[in-house]
Amino acid sequence: MFKKTDTSVAETSVKRSSSPAHTLISRDTEVIGDIHFSGELIIEGRVRGSIFAEDASESIVRVAEKGTVEGEIKAPSAVVNGLVQGNVHCSKHIELASKAIVVGDLHYNMIEMVLGSEVNGKLVHITAEEGGAPRLSDNTKPAEQLDLANSDTP
Image (cartoon, rainbow, N blue to C red; front, side, top):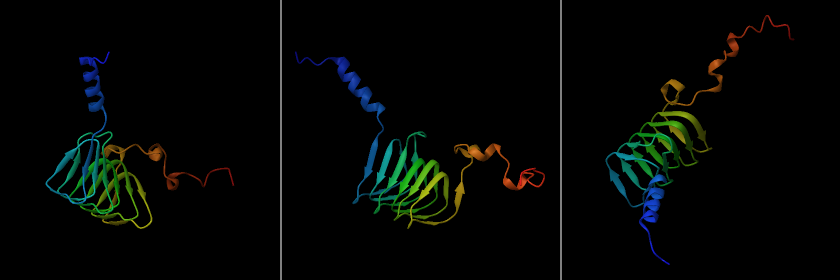
């Protein structure tokens, strides 16, 4: 009646491996060295090293309000509400919350900045050739190139 079969154990392990991994660096933790991860990385403590996402499609870095990163971040998506001292590269989306401070260049495809966030560096938009999503206006001419002087409409 309550017999456990090998197939149920195999199905459970498959389900676990297909779900994204979550990694937490807690408030009282300091990591010295580079981090390579997939899934979700939540930083509430301090990281002295670069952060690289292994899974290019679904990975996300979250730097909490008291979290700090002293190094480069390369991930598809990031949410920053703490301090990042280094360049940030996000091929999909980055969100800078109200207490975010980025000291370095920010390479992004889509960006969301809340009032109060700071970027002390360059904002560099990633084009489709550099790994970002294609823009809607890529196939259209800029307004200056349009011949509006010869149009018949007032």
